[in-house]
Each structure stands twice: as C-alpha cells, then as structure tokens.
Length: 246
Image (cartoon, rainbow, N blue to C red):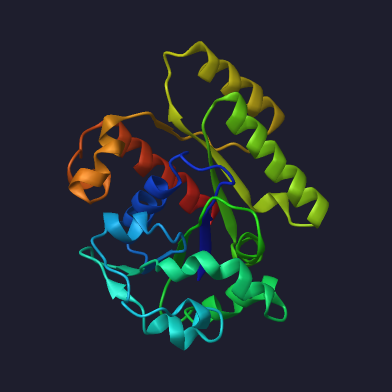
C-alpha cells in the first residue's frame, strides 16, 4: 500500500481538483483506492457526492484504524472509496498536539488499511502545523501543485526550507505546475526558472481550464463530462507519471 498526499501550504492552487482526478484515475487503472478528505471544507467529498457523518468523530480519527473503517463510503466509481471530511477536522492540530508521538499517529492508523487498499490519497488542507507534519511522515510521496507565479514559487521554497530544517526527506516531494496559462510570459519564465532550480519537477502540468472549474457544477471528475478536453488528458498524464514514481 502506498500513501499519496496532495498538499500545498497555499490555497487556491488546484489541490483538491488534483486529489479528485488522480484518485479517479488511480481507481480506473485498477488500484483499490481510498481518498481521505482531510480538509474540513470537504470539497473532495462534495465532488464525489459523499456526505459526511452527522456526528462529530474527529476526536477519534487518530486512535485506531477501526474508527476510519466505520467512516468509509463507496463512491460511484469502481475501486474508489471515500472517507468524507467533517467540520470537526478543523481541530486536528489541537487533537494531535495532545497525543504522544503525534507525527506518527496518522501513519499508524493508515497502516491498518494496508490489506484493503493499494493506494490512499490524502486531500490535505492548506496549512502548516501538527496535521501537516503527520502527513509528511505518513506519505510515501507529497504531490505539490505550484502555480507559476512569484507568490506560489515563494511558498514552494518555504516548504523546501521547512523540510530541510526539520529533517524531512525532500525526495518525497513531487511538484507539478498547476493552473498554467501558456500564453502568459510570466508563467513560462517562472516554469523555466523553477525547473532549473528544482530538476525533479514533474513534466506533466495542469492548464488553467474552465473544465476544471466546472467540476463543482457536475460534481464529478473531469473525465466524466469533458473526456476529450486538454484538462482531462493532463490529469491522466499526471497520474501516469505519479504512478511510475510510486
């Protein structure tokens, strides 16, 4: 079993769209896949039409994997299950702060799923705290969307610096460009600069596209309503590249 976390310190970079589409393509490729929506906003859950539990269960999330098993919901797609987000997940940093070995708690509970799933996809909230560090420990790879803008470049460099300072392996990081507007000279220039500074950037990139924005209207992965569009081909290509790394 592999754990793939889609993470960014910065919001609005296409993180949830990547989580939804990559989980979909992983399942379509034959991997038994579980998407865990860790973001209390619950966008991934919304896109897959999966409702959260009515009762607050966030306090029990990191205790045993049996608590997670009770919250698994089937999606409309073969090989793909969902654990939907709950508003109580907003307290995860506090919950983890009060636990021993907090950085290892997420990894421990996810290991209980190893006989059930080939891949776990974590859609992470845009933050840097106890939950993020638990994700850094649990994930085999951290997939980081980066918009080719100065601010997004700065945020990515801050993440690299944090990994170096705290002793996390930068080899876990798989960065890719997201929301790319190829007609903008700035986007092209920043992509070239960042690829030179970080040669491990994935070759696949996701274009800025109305089809990605329309996921909210259709509440489905892009392949379901824009099969022949460039955005769908881009997500499929991204999944194939990530799969090879896994």
